[in-house]
Length: 246
Image 1 (cartoon, rainbow, N blue to C red):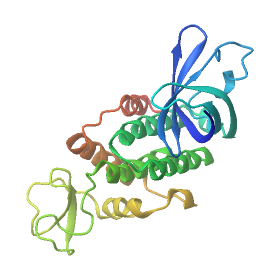
Image 2 (cartoon, one colour):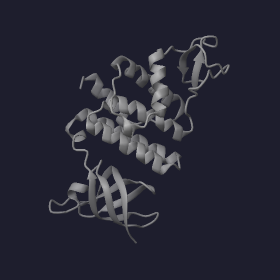
Image 3 (cartoon, rainbow, N blue to C red):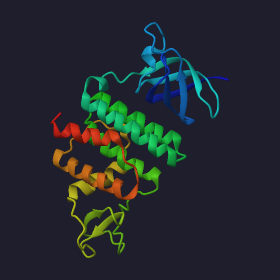
Image 4 (tube, one colour):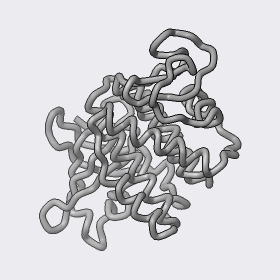
């Protein structure tokens, strides 16, 4: 069956000498495997459209529960600005790897797809990939079923005198219930709560202090480690790049 589907390539791996298998996030179907036959040949029309972050309309010979076959791609956006910068590339790879893990645990295919595409577009437009990374990570917790309580103290239910967010207890902690939980700044807590509601596609300005953004990043690292079971190679690579001051 020949289909035209909107999607984005998240991962590409070599198959035999001349072909590749593509993991394509299709808007309506989730992740499907597509064989791009002969795409490694210099003369192949599929060569330039069989790489990660190619986003467009895929014409495929669709085989349910089997490898589909790629016929052609009409590109919507190639994210050329992302590909000019190693930091942007690294964060975009992280987005892709994260989504590949999350989609396995969620049926909300189209909503996750929209968040991913909007995130990549904003990075391509020049918005901070570090900030966008924090926003997409926070939103993905909704689909993993482990989103923290950002409405009230997880111990007593009050909305007053909130002093931190605790990874172990999954949410806000007030002054009266606080014991030895690590404190997080008020600004960081405000942004974390805002990130959950913000529509990434409608962001027109991001003016966030680097120190506060790093505080949010550390909280999310800790929260993912303690509550999701997801460990991503791309995130470890980003940390290595940070150490060499990209």
